[in-house]
Length: 487
Image (cartoon, rainbow, N blue to C red; front, side, top):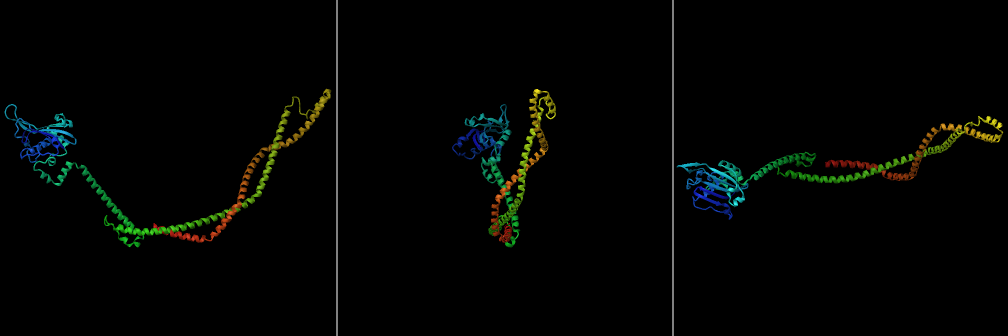
């Protein structure tokens, strides 16, 4: 809070009107109210407190002393204060209750207390235009309510901190720690510090709970660690380990020493395990070589069996080739039959195309001879025609005899055609099989040579198989013991 301007009249020992411009006083730094006892220094503090709270500063002082005993009965008493707080600049004017001279007649008439509160701008303060502000409240009660919301301090706290009436500083020092803390918290707005302290307290409780939980977990872990099979026999002192409190490091040091020894043993076991694994890998390679040899022997036996099968199939292949030759001959005969069939159809068509009245030669030969006898002029032509007809009859008769056989063959042509198609498929399959067998026969000598070399090498290593199996078994047993020790 900063006081900017104070005006008062008829207050305390001051019967007249007086003003104090605090802005001018504070411009030079600190200032001092100096004067003899009773000169009115405390009355200035009373005027400030009265303007803000409607009471004088001293707790033991009578509020009635705010009215100057030296003032005329017609002169009103008042205190007019302009002050600045974080929310803005405000002006408050108060007048106490007093008795003034009646305007008519004799005697005095009471005057009620009055109060008005304004909010001012900085420009109004600079120009001292005190009436240029906005009225926030009027009336002693309303102004008191509004100021209680604007000011963070009660009157008691205000006179203990901002202003200290004469003789009351010792009272502030004698406050209890609780009252002094409440006053200072209000004065310096220590809400954030209190919240921070409360948060620290809460965090301390949470951390303490975590420490307790971690301690319990450490105790359980220590007990589980001490229950490991074989640990007590190896390290008898481990049975007496326990956590006395959170700062006890003895169990951890003992566990670290035991862990160091176990780590050294584990390192040695790992080295031994690597050696055993190397030996096992070598034995595995030898076993794989043995299996490869056995497979090569099986392959060689299979090839030998396949060779015998191929030799047995040579005769069958020759028979299939004879069938293929026969199939080619039959195909030629079928082609000839088809040609004969077409010739017969052409002959039938030619006979159908003879002129009307011409009958087959064999049936009408006698009638033709009689016509020739009667027609002497056509005798020569008829003779030639008869000769030609006789020749044609002979050829046709021969062809008809051969066509009878062709008809029989034609009737069985469909079935033979299907049989030939099946023989074509069989011939194709046989040709492919012969080609595959030929390739296998060509590759067989090289494969036999390779297998013979593998057999010689395998037999050289076969003598060590039994000993390698025994060594591998022993290595596996040692490896299992090492893995159990590591676990």
